Image (tube, rainbow, N blue to C red; front, top):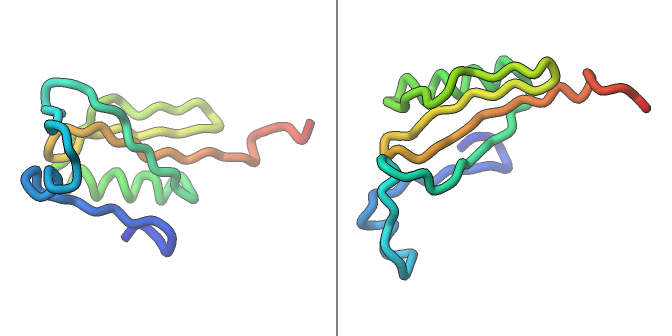
Length: 95
């Protein structure tokens, strides 16, 4: 459970195969997409990314700091690309 509105289900490859009618991609050798989650704060973003890395994920890119948007990227245990992002909407002009 990420929060009251967001859940992530992690499945073994064989169980996931029962949900789809096409072959599973090898995420260790090919990018299949990026699943991104938005955090409520930079601290929460770092907490979630740190938990993913502590659970065995690996950093896929250096953290990105655009001043108003912060992103941490990692691969899960199967090589799928993930991102946790925080957007500081207060940094935008009221115009």
